[in-house]
Image (cartoon, rainbow, N blue to C red; front, side, top):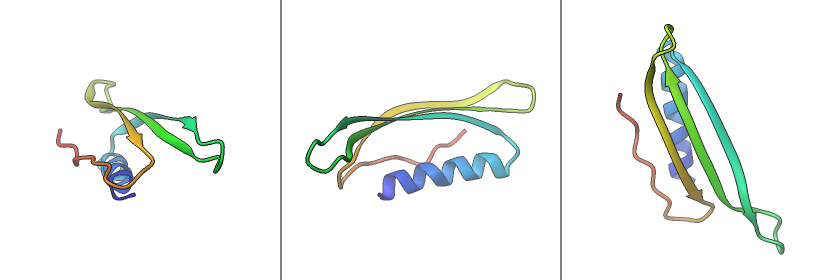
Length: 74
């Protein structure tokens, strides 16, 4: 999904700039017919080398076309 790829690119950008990214992705609401999750809950926190929080984010992603995620700016 484009939205999820943008999220991954944000993680990579933060890490490449020397920040720590702590994240949790939780799969939920599994479709019994396909076994695929209907949602992916995303939580992340970005910290500098001193442990100060620069950014945090929490959002459920629907495992369907049309999901949006805007690139983060800190």
